[in-house]
Image (cartoon, rainbow, N blue to C red; front, side, top):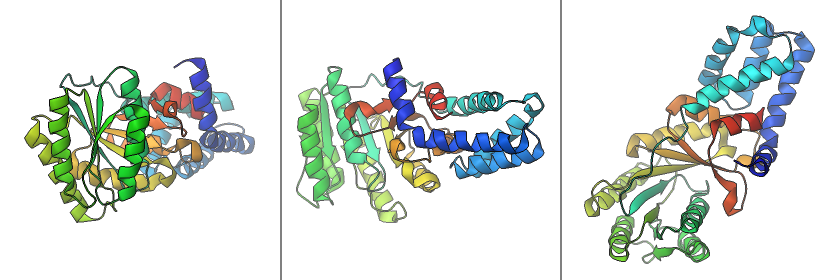
Amino acid sequence: MPTGQFGQLKDRLSKTRQSLSNGLSKIFLRYKSINEDALESLEELLVTSDIGIQTTLDLIERIGKKYSDISEEDQLKNILRDEIISFLSVCSDNSETSISKPHVIMVVGVNGVGKTTTIGKLAAKFNATGLKVLIAASDTFRAAATEQLSIWSKRAGAEIVKHKENSDPAAVAYDSIEAALARDMDIVLIDTAGRLHTNTNLMEELKKIKRSISKKLAGAPHEILLILDATTGQNALPQTEMFNEALGVTGIALTKLDGTAKGGMVISICGNFKIPLKYIGIGEKIEDLQPFDPEKFANAIL
């Protein structure tokens, strides 16, 4: 990532960084060096930064083995940063994009997390690399979602398949694969409904969409991308668990990181699920949806 982009990432994650840095400074101001009491305060800081209890305990255990070597704040920052990178590396996306054509990405998540916007940004990114993109408007229960996708498809230079409001979402997905095969498309992005994840009917509907896609194109969908809103903090964990259990999530995009001090939940998600974190959203522009880089992220928050 060029310096300018890293500077932007650091700037957009300033709320999380300030929260962690201020907390670390207070710990050193109070204890002067790292001891058992200081580790307890560090544990409290990490939990309140939305890193999560289990992930925090794992980090504290690792740091605890090294604390006798820590006499300065910068040393603690460096050790914490290295341990966070180690955690996040489990979630780095090392998978190669499927050579299947079309490559089908089913996009899931509860309402309000930024699914439609993320689909639009991904379509624009793929289009910019010369790939032909088709969007399927399978959230047929929200007229606004289809309208938004229509606007994004024009902006991104993508084609769109949509049906009437309240149509069968699985039928839209099926028709989109049919259209993609007929039009020689490279990428298919399938939007889906996102009523509360506790709604069993929603999960059954999503499973039906997945089956419908597979029926038309063996091996598809090639990716199931879960969109999470960073501002919800630890509430993202049960969402991830529910969608992963029902569908087998292959990747995560975390939106709205620029508007929260809860950036630590990135570490929590990685620590708990080991699902590749593919993208992070740090603003409204297309370029603000960035591929996730563990090292850059850790350097930006500490």
